[in-house]
Length: 330
Ligand SMILES: NC(=O)c1ccc[n+]([C@@H]2O[C@H](COP(=O)([O-])OP(=O)(O)OC[C@H]3O[C@@H](n4cnc5c(N)ncnc54)[C@H](O)[C@@H]3O)[C@@H](O)[C@H]2O)c1
Image (cartoon, rainbow, N blue to C red; front, side):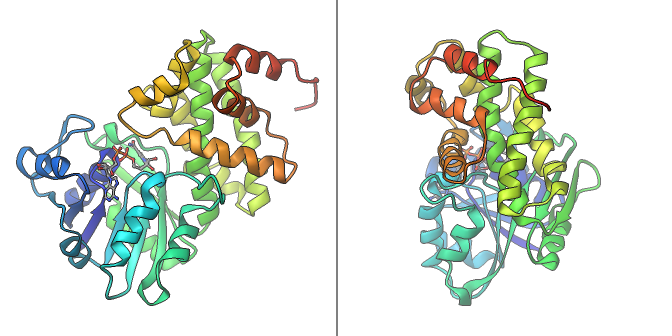
């Protein structure tokens, strides 16, 4: 099959590797000519400094990219998604299956990425939408290390179609799901708790605190899942607890890394400026905090991270406030 990947960064190239290992014809589009050149000439992912298969081709020509395939796989950070999608839309002349692997929620609107696609893509060009999510660091996938993710769509046939495209018996196992809302919420919300996990570690706390954070974070995610009608199966699956565990315990996670630096006393803005890759937990935290307050959901960890990031509360103070909450049954 032919597949176009929009965004030739870490995850775009991780997924491109899986697709080419599955013998698909992959064309990567990136807005950055330097990235495209490195893919075509040196066959590397510059963000990760890792080799990629020579058969992955890249272009800065959006017409060529959109015409290449029926399946358009978006892997750009959510904060630039509207811009990237608007560009693609101007090149559409037939229906496409839109697949998205970026994780996040729009702060102002609390829109999930699928809602942005259905809002922006003219119906005559919109065949369907599939989200890819789950515990998957690009660093490991690009080296062919075992990874399991979920292909989620309200349309079961679309979910299984993309599952088949990506499933690789050697190292990449893909499940399908029709709980699109759950898959999207999990992928976005876990980044807030990754920031929190980094903060804890930066402040010198240990494994017990991290495990507690994962458990209590899952409770907060569960409240938001329930509010949006997402299922318990998703909460307890790869896109929920699976992604939460990997992102809260792995130094690969850039949200974890950002939290760690802030926990060590580095200034927030200095920290964000020093990161070469996106820290999506910040935007998602803003969105989740607003949502919790508008709907009266009790989410103390999300509130604490919001206070540290947006109200410049000292991490130690936010931590003290969390621990001094009234005792209650679990
Ligand atoms: N890196 C991971 O391990 C990983 C894993 C799962 C999901 N994700 C998600 O994937 C998304 C992308 O993350 P990443 O790590 O690949 O980011 P990245 O920063 O490594 O790469 C993003 C790429 O998008 C390109 N880009 C930016 N604007 C564009 C536009 N308008 N059109 C085309 N290309 C554009 C950039 O030039 C860059 O190459 C994020 O939402 C992230 O949460 C990442």
